[in-house]
Length: 275
Image 1 (cartoon, rainbow, N blue to C red):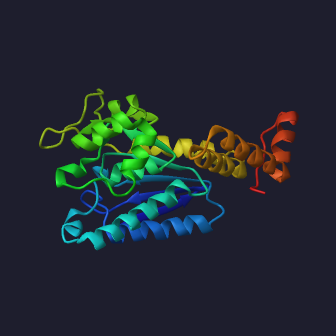
Image 2: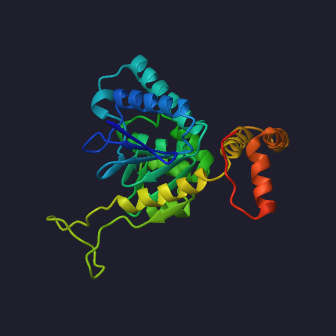
């Protein structure tokens, strides 16, 4: 259900729960186990999260939720929120390579990541009200903080989907890349039903390229930058500046800081060791 690959310090994590990569309790638990593996592996510098097939994650498992009473629903929400909190606070940056449908829990996972790159095939939405429930994995909180309360309320109250272009316009994603296969002439390829053939490779490639760029920087500096931003967002500007100054100064006790500045003065590429 969760595929994991580590190469050159980049952890590629893929939802592979066909046909639409829905989030069941078992998928969430397996994702949690994968995060534990990443937390223990000091060679990991960045994580890319994507989906196999047509979907990034098309939502939570409705067949599982339909049998829940309020107590079971509370436990399910706490499980999902706990896993997504771990993504948000993971010590390394997490890039969401949104290849297709990211609905309900799929949007909630994407907005728990640090950076979102979308394929042209990507669709976002919080359609929970269509089932007479609300987002339960952080959507009511993170979405409003990310794109503003007005647009977040519109999406959550209507249950509407938005495409890659609107997601870029409102700041839900930071980049959009091609998402459909083309023939030699550049025309879109169509399947037997006349629909464009989805291509996940560009969004994964763009995300991996950004991940490699991040992985080449000072590892402790990246960790401190993420920590400073995350913690500061929940505080006043004055408190956030205190955290920034503290974390900035702490990096001057590292070998990488000495190496980075010496390499700059020597006009050569630095060799960071994460120390």
